[in-house]
Amino acid sequence: MNILIIAEQQHGALKKASLNAVSAGLSLAQKAGGELHLALLGSGIGAAAEELKGYGAKVLHVVDNPALKDYLAEPYCEAVAQLAKSLNAVYVGAASTAVGKDLLPRLAAKLGAGMATDVLGFEGSGANVLFKRPMWAGNVIAEVEITTPVKVFNIRTTEFAAAPKGAAAEVKAEQVQLSGSYKTKYLEFKPVKSARPELTEARVVVSGGRGTKGNFKPVEELADELHAAVGASRAAVDAGWVPNDLQVGQTGKVVAPELYIAAGISGAIQHLAGMKGSKVIVAVNTNAEAPIFQVADYGLVADLFKVLPELQAAVKAGK
Amino acid sequence: MKILVTAKRVEDPESKIKVKPDGSGIVTEGVGYKINPFDEIAVEEALRLVAKHQGEVVVVSIGSDKVQTEMRSAMAMGADRGIWVKHDGPCDADLAARLLKAVIEKEKPDLVLLGKQAIDDDQNQAGQILAELLGWGQATFASKMESLESEAEAAKTPGIAIDGKSAKVVREVDGGVETLQVELPAVITCDLRLNKPRYASLPGIMKAKKKPIAEMAPAALGVDTAVKVKVVKLSPPPGRKAGIIVPDVATLVQKLKSEAKVI
Ligand SMILES: Cc1cc2nc3c(=O)[nH]c(=O)nc-3n(C[C@H](O)[C@H](O)[C@H](O)COP(=O)(O)OP(=O)(O)OC[C@H]3O[C@@H](n4cnc5c(N)ncnc54)[C@H](O)[C@@H]3O)c2cc1C
Ligand SMILES: Nc1ncnc2c1ncn2[C@@H]1O[C@H](COP(=O)(O)O)[C@@H](O)[C@H]1O
Figure 1 (spheres, rainbow over the protein chains, first blue to last red):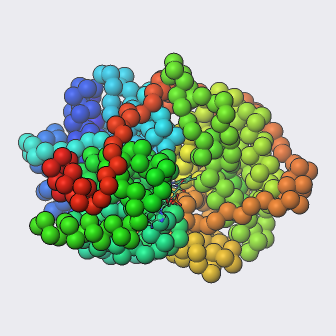
Figure 2: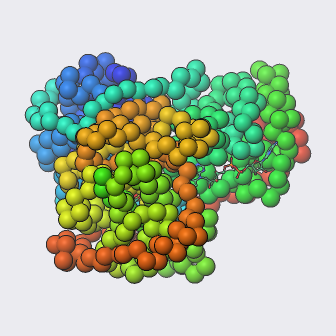
Figure 3: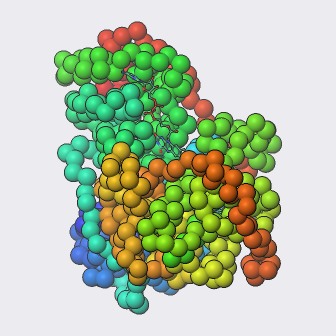
């Protein structure tokens, strides 16, 4: 039985989330009793392939094709579907990144497969593995069965530690037939430039909410002192104070850093859905009744404009 | 231009969701229902697009007779008419997409707008599946360059730019925003920052009562209602142990250093 995990690269660099997906693939291979195959698609992706091959998969299929330079659902879907079919893959998965979320449901439809989103773990064995996944903003954990012969899923990266280095995979350069007639065209990408660590990869995250009243300076300065990423609640993002990309929650990024500091965030269930897997949670809020304190390991009922600079100074002094 | 937009009935995001003791479902007593927030954004965008380009907004919902309430909410916002696909029983994203495809083949809209995800099952799949089944292009997670506090938003400018044959869509992706051009007809799924949905006005609510809702049955649409994804069991998420309130920053730092060992 073959398991196919689709890895992801951006501008030729392997995405870290792919290593979490590889780890999910290895765990599934153990439960289901199959062999792990990886796929990497793009144009000029030799270096990323070289990196990806060293994580214990059996085969790494590399589709290096100029037509796959910028990610678009239609050609990627065609290419992956061909690979999955030629391998008779029973399980096809990826990380729940923006690309994973866009591509996999379309791929599932092409393969006539059912799909589970944001998978947290696998239960059972063989071809009858059940998928654990969150519903209702993580208020409920469901076990779902995919009844089709092919099963598609994407995984929540915070639930699977990045795969450790392992035996080298056999690398196969694959040719795919691309129809070339697509309804979508890639026009441009506007990156959010930041010198800070990426939100989903950072060891520490400092997030601000409506309580910052639009002044993210104390949040950012504390983040920099801790070499942390900056996150935000939906309220802060909707107000245009920080880029969309920083939203933590049910419908934003899901993070599980070692330390999550929530400042001026009330702790709505949709926000908690994106951070309650963090190892240690600190909440700073002027309202002692704020729900964020119900999940915080350490709470400070105080004004963030007073407390964050103090905390920053203390961290600096302790270095 | 004819726009088809979906309105799923979901539990109010403000209500507290609890699993039944036997794990067979969620406790529905005391839970409010409303149109999926992402679908509300889709309805708003559809209304802005027809305000600019003329045309008609058709709202579709799949579910029991109760979903007519959410269709009326969409019509109170301004949608012209409704199509109710009557289906009790489980409906995964795949079945929703197959039913929508059948409706779309009858209605032949120029554009189909969905929410990016339904906040009950949180699957984030139906739009992408639908696009593949129709052989159309997809643009998921539609957003806009301007913020929700911008003048463009205050002026109710649509975030999706349409030139007759194609649509330009700004998408929220990892690390920034991307712009795609997609040929019409197309499937577009809406994210949070695309717009701020309007409130229904009183005259809107009155008018909505008289707007037509056509009823369709899956069998008549030629759609098999078997689902591909079955929910076997529900359970509550693992809880977090309640923590402590610390009096000051000094205590916090000391705890983070010696107890939690994270700084
Ligand atoms: C479909 C849907 C999806 C959603 N998805 C998300 C999501 O992914 N992520 C998300 O975050 N939200 C999401 N939300 C929104 C969510 O429900 C809340 O509205 C949002 O999280 C509130 O943000 P906030 O905590 O910053 O603001 P508020 O709830 O307004 O809280 C602000 C807090 O700041 C405190 N405060 C004020 N001044 C100070 C000060 N000087 N010092 C310290 N504290 C102060 C206040 O006491 C208050 O608790 C979603 C909602 C819906 C309906
Ligand atoms: N029963 C339904 N009725 C109407 N629209 C639906 C239904 N189920 C899903 N949809 C649409 O598909 C989107 C994505 O749903 P999902 O893939 O389930 O997260 C939703 O935001 C709706 O726009």
